[in-house]
Structures are given as structure tokens and as C-alpha cells.
Length: 488
Ligand code: ADP
Image (cartoon, rainbow, N blue to C red):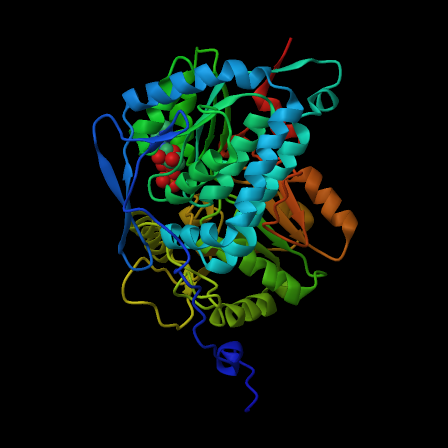
């Protein structure tokens, strides 16, 4: 093989045969009803909407659209179930939650395939990250159910009642687990709405919940879009709203419940800073940059979408980054080789493409690998912009796609100021050989999660959440129990 030194070296070195995951073993019904009071129930108005595969635009199934009357039914069922569920001992509640966790594990392969079909993410991610982490969340909070008096010593924690939970489309089953597991562990009952483009794994979770024998009405899953979500937010018998989604909808929700006694947690957008110091292990950092921005096509609220590289190493980091981008495999989400799958929806693809145009019009210098893209479906090449500055819109605004904006810095103080110059405050990453620098930056960066020499690592025992326009409240860990209890 001739030795190449340019940035195409990875691509020229090897190729892979397709390795698609089989879909024979999964069952998807042609139509799904709402999951209310332990049964699949037709929506009152009889309306269904289509859920399509973003990688080829084929129809996968139809899903019920819940109106406010259906939401009323779901809330009534959850309110009825609350009396017995909240009176059960923590140990008994824990048994059900453990059972749900084990059933997710048993059906992990099926859930992974459906997650990739419905949402477009690579099977490697749904198989190795989304679904195992969803099971882990249930295991983790099952463990807390009978230990709440240790979690909150001398404070006598009590559940709130019926909680309304609204989740986004980027990690569908995982977000359902983040919401449902702590709510059940603390004795609340639930009405959850998945996002309209990715309802299927939540509906599979409804099947699992049914199989687990969880008492009827403890978890209700209603499908639909913004109107259905608004009906949950505005329902007078709901005691708490947990929302993960866009900052725009988060602001609406905050206004909608102002003046009521509902509790609220919001996990919203982000524009994470990923900071590479000159003393970092550069090859690992490049891998970290790739993971920070291209994981899940960049549909990640904590994505490292603003890269800051110390000036002395910027040239070599950018060159290595381009080389690594050339080796990324874009295509069939079900292929086990795929690194970058389909953009979740046409709507989101348009938003990303619009931002790429904005970046170009503002004078940014773009780099995209020269790779083939599938003809059908929603696809976007991994993209980076150099020669951008703090005032560029692609540096300030959340794109929620595989688009990275790169800036350089000289000193620690400069990078802290630049990294904090954002309306968001969800995540950041610091790459350096020096632990002391990581600790110093962790104090100075205004972000809820700061990773040291890694990025996008999640664990059920770690709290996650933001500052400023990234929202408030924490999910995960001991902190994640608190929004679901009151103290008497
Ligand atoms: P995105 O802009 O990325 O689609 P959204 O914030 O719109 O993200 O969606 C996150 C979740 O919020 C989805 O389940 C969506 O259906 C829901 N949603 C959208 N609009 C509203 C609303 N007005 N009230 C409550 N939920 C909403």
C-alpha cells in the first residue's frame, strides 16, 4: 500500500462489506393505540398519524393521536392508581421496577432495531448505548425505591401524585427511562408522551410494562404532537411536569404553569464547549471531538458543538479531524458499520441545512468529507466550520445536527470567557494532561456537566441538567429523585 500523508489516509486504507442487523425478529403492528389504564385503547377521535423510517421514508406504522379528552382519561387512570401505588412499600415498588429493567434487557435486540428504524440512529449506538442505559436507569432507581429514607434522612419524603412527562425524539427509550424510573421509585404515577417522530419504543415499553404486571394506570403512555403535550402541561390534576426538548417549548411550558402549584423540571438545549489544550493526548482528543459532535448525528442537547483548540496545536488537530471525518461511514442505520445514520426528520434536516447556509453566508470556511450519500431519506454530511467567531450564529445557536464550529484560543482565561459566552449551560469537555486544569475549568465553566478527557458519557448514578437557557432541575443519580418528592 502506498503511504499517504494527506487527510484521506483513513478512507483509502480499508473498506467494509455491509453488515446489516436483521429485522426478522421484530414485530411492529400496523397501528398503535394509546396505553391507558393498563390497556391499549383507541383514541376518542379515531385519529392516527404516520411514523416513517427517516433513512428511506417508508411507512413503519401508524400511531394514535391523543386529544385532551384522551389525556383526561389517562390522568384519571393515573390518579386512581396513585392511591394504591403510593401506599405500597418501597420494596414492593422496587420489585416491579426491577422487572421492567429485566424485560428491557431481554428484549434489547428488538428495542435497538426499532429505535434505529424509527429514529435513524446507528444500530451500534442504540444497541450499545440507548437500550442498555435505559435498562440501567430502571435498575438504578429500582434500587432506591426502598431506600428513600436514606436518600433524604429525617425528611420523610412523600410522592407528589400524577406526574406529566414529555420527551424528545433524540433518545426515545432512554428519555422515557430517565423520566419513568425515578417517578415510580418515589411512588408517583405517570402520564408520558413520546415525541411524534419516535413513538414506537415507548409503545414497546408499554407492552413491557403490561407484561411486568405493573398495576393498571401506574404508567400511561399517550402519543401525539405539541397539542397533546400542551394538554398534559395544562391539566389541573397533574402535580409535576418533567420536560426534555427545545428551549422554545420549555419557555412556553414555564409560562403555561406559572401561578399554579405544579412543580417543573426542564432539560432544554445546549451549545457545549469542547476545549482542547496543547498538552492533551491529541489523537484521543480528536476521537473525543468526533464523539462529542457526531454521536447520534449531533441530535444531542449536550453535544460538543463549539470546539476550542489551543492555537499551538490547532493546525494539527484540524488536519487530524478532517482525516478522521473522512473515515466516518454514513448510511443505513441498521448496518453495524455505520457511524452516522439518518437525520431524524425532514423538518430537522431543513433546520440543519439552513444553519449550514447561514454559516457560509457569514463567511465561515466549511469542510465536509467527500463521501457518497444514500439517495433516499434524510442525510447530512458531517460538517465543520473554521474561521468563525463568537458573533456567528452557528457559534451561538443550537443546530442539533452534525455541524461543528471551531475557534482557537491562547490562554486559559480567554477560553473560559469564550466558552461561557453563550445563553446555554448544559455541558462542556476539557482535554488536557493536567488534572488540576480540569478541576480549575470545572469551577469556572458554567455548565451542568463537565467531562474531563472524555465526552458524552452517561451513567444513571450521575446527575445531568443545565443552567441558564439549558433549563433547571437534575435527572439521574440521587439528585434525580428530588423533583419527584415533597417533604412533610
Ligand atoms: P424539537 O423542536 O426538537 O422537535 P420540541 O421541544 O418541539 O423539540 O419537542 C419535544 C417534545 O415536546 C415532543 O414530545 C413534542 O411533541 C413536545 N411538544 C411540542 N410542543 C409542545 C407544547 N406546546 N407543549 C407541550 N409539549 C410540546
